[in-house]
Length: 261
Ligand code: ADP
Ligand code: MG
Image (tube, rainbow, N blue to C red):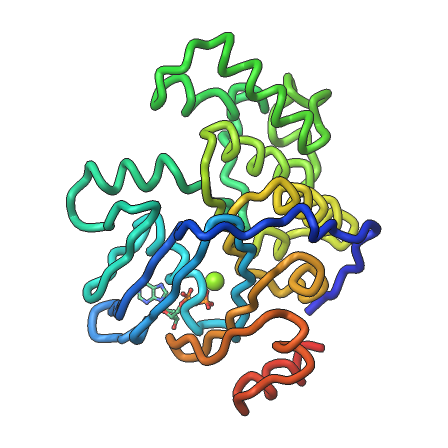
C-alpha cells in the first residue's frame, strides 16, 4: 500500500460542510444471493463532506458506493440521495444518477472516441445539451484537470494518469453534485497517482461532496473530514482523520492500520 505525499497542502478553509443532507442511508442490508454483503449500514453525508472509505479487500466498500447510484440494488432499508429515495422506480434511479458522478479504478473511456468526444457524448445524447455548449463545457473541465491540449487525441495515446483525469472531467461534464471514487489510483504508477490525487484535492477545495474508496492514507489525512472503516460488510468505526489514525477504537481498525501504515 502506498502513501503518496502531496506537493501542496489542501486548503481546508475552502472545504465547507453544509447543513444540507446529500446522502442518507438507513438500516441498509444487501445480499449477493445467500451472501450477506452489507449489514445494517447507517450513514448520513452532508453536502461538502469528503469521506474516505477504508477497509480490507472484500469488506464491501465497492458494493456500498455502487449502491449509492444503484449500480447494485439493496434489499432492505433506505438510500436517499438528494431527497430522492432509490427504489425500483426508474425515474428515481435516473434522477439520482444525474446528480452522482462515478470514477472507477479502470477508467472505462471509449477507445474509439477522442477525449473531447468522450466528454461530450453523454451531455449531448443523454442531456440534450447543444453540441457547442457541451464542447465548451468539456474544454472547461479538461482545463481544470490540466489536459486541454489532449482534447483531440484518443485515450490509447494518453498515460494512465491522464486517462483517469479525463474520466474525472467526463464525470464533471454531467454537472454532478456528488462524486463517488472507487480506488481511482489503484491501477496507476506513483507519479501518476499524485496528479490524479491533486485533481481530487482541487475538487474538494471547490466544495464537491465526495466519497472515496482509497488506500491513499495521505489523501485521507489531507482532504477527508471523515474516515469510515469497513470490515465484513459493516461500518466498524468512523472518525475525523486525526482521531481515526491516532486513536483508533476497535481492534479491527488497529490491526488494519498496523498493516498499512
Ligand atoms: P471491497 O470493495 O471492499 O473489496 P466488494 O464490495 O467488492 O469489496 O465485495 C464484497 C464481497 O462481496 C466480497 O466477498 C466479494 O467477493 C463479494 N462480491 C462482490 N461482488 C459480487 C457479485 N457481483 N456477486 C457475488 N459476490 C460479490
Ligand atoms: Mg472494491
